[in-house]
Image (cartoon, rainbow, N blue to C red; front, side, top):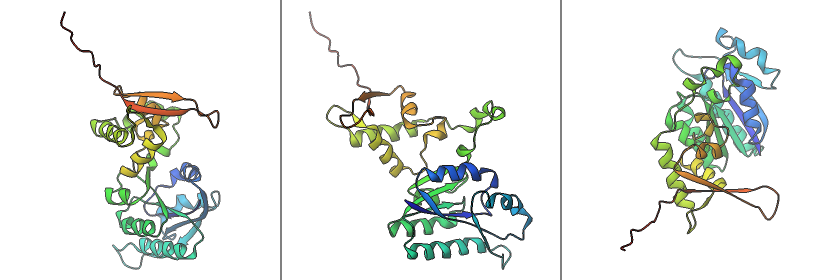
Amino acid sequence: MNIAVLIDGDNIPSGYVEEMMEEIAKYGNPTIKRIYGDWTRPGLTKWKNLLLENAIIPIQQYGYTRGKNATDSAMIIDAMDILYSGKVNGFCLVSSDSDFTRLATRLREAGMKVFGIGEKKTPNPFIVACDKFIYIEILKKQTEEKVESKGSEVDKITKKEINLITSTINDLSDDDGWAFLGDVGSLIQKKRPNFDARNYGFEKLTPLIKSINKFEIERRENQKNKHQLIFVRIKQKSNTRNRKS
């Protein structure tokens, strides 16, 4: 998949750029990489040193009127130009601004895959407008100094998440209650684009589900290759019946 990466420089901290580009590469080839902002402002100075290292093209956009975000307009116009050029299959919109909600919706209407990256403060309308939304905080590599404070950065698994997993397994399960974990993960992503095992301190969905006592996992041999298939189901309740002597 060829992806156009459009970054709202006014809205995203520069300290995450390396991890952000590594994350985007998991989903496709970032053939277009642009960042928008008023480069005459001192607030974007930290970005300047990172642009060449990551082959990101800066797009100058002056703030014509105080209080109006000209950067958003420039980014939206460019996105539509890229869409009609037919050069990409997907977009990655990097911003925490809900003003891009309609853009994400429009791109998906045109058949584009839309990834969003932003801070945890991102309003929900923009999050759900994307196919997948990644919180930028979880991309930051954990240094030895930050490991001790990780507990404050990781969300706790609540009943809401457990209910989401449970309902998804029920949607996909066979007669014995088993569902293929790959399908479960895909459907969860469609139901909640910002669901990510890393938000809860797990690298993958499998260990997250293992940590919840309500579910059980079964590994099965794959006839086509050496990779095992992982299935999950809700733990079965004991059907022991009291018998009269």
